[in-house]
Amino acid sequence: MRSLNNILELSVEEIDELIKTALDIIENPGSYSEICKGKKLATLFFEPSTRTRLSFEAAMMELGGNVLGFSEATSSSASKGESVADTSRVVSCYADIIAMRHPKEGAPYVASLNATVPVINAGDGGHNHPTQTLADLLTIYRERGTLNNMTVGFCGDLKFGRTVHSLIQALSRYTGIKVVLISPEELKLPSYVKKDTLSANNIPYEQTNDLESAISQLDILYMTRVQKERFFNEEDYLRLKDSYILDPDKLVTAKKDLVIMHPLPRVNEISVAVDADPRAHYFDQVLNGKYMRMALILMLLGLNREV
Image 1 (cartoon, rainbow, N blue to C red):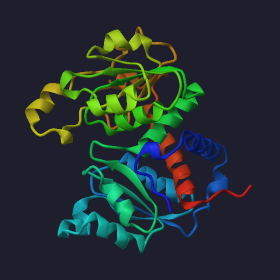
Image 2: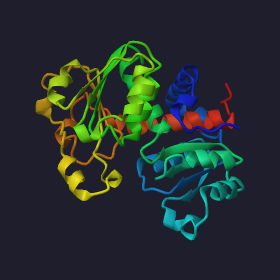
Image 3: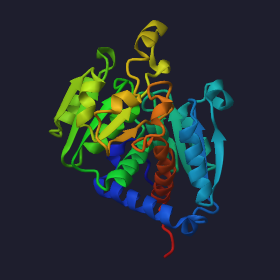
Image 4: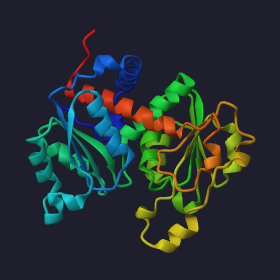
């Protein structure tokens, strides 16, 4: 039995296989519509979510399976003091696979050690978000036809942004990757990510607080929101929340084939005026997330479509 806590638990070959499966699902949805018949996915969300939870649920339903679970900690026995370990063991009695989001780093890993079914980390604090990374990788692949040879700019909250940390880890294993880190001083990428991922893999990177000066060199621009829920005091949040706002004027010098991404939800860091730009692909990421979660569920359950 295998779980997924961190994107690095998947080899490059396995990621390529997941992308291949996702593309096949897009082309042949009917071939997958009953592959999970009789299987149940439990969504254990101890933290608010719209896209990720509904994406997992839609993925399982479109594979012919069923879904059960909860969408906030107060509606679970966690509110009575039950541990993550016990919750995961209990839910293993009801479901074939678990997707868990939790505000505490490492909670899904603890669940995976105690569950008797596969556990998928659907986001743990500011740590990891591997299935969002799979959605990101499929989006990049569908737009560029490759995951190699590109300059990727990450802009906004790079300190607490678990989607940023996971995507940097994933891209570090491909060739010809250059990274541009765009953030205010207080929200810079943690030193351990730079040391353990970028430097360890000889990925060239630069740091700046100026989006406009960096945008012209980018092939991918990955915008993120400043996350209010990660701050300990509101003053710091209010001071930093509007550090970067992408609008059409800032895109004047950008490449014609730039891929603009955002894990969502956005607040105001991307103007709605950008939505009509053909380079905007953040809503495509949402749909791609469903396809990649479908592929991942099949992988972890050991299921393949009949040809």
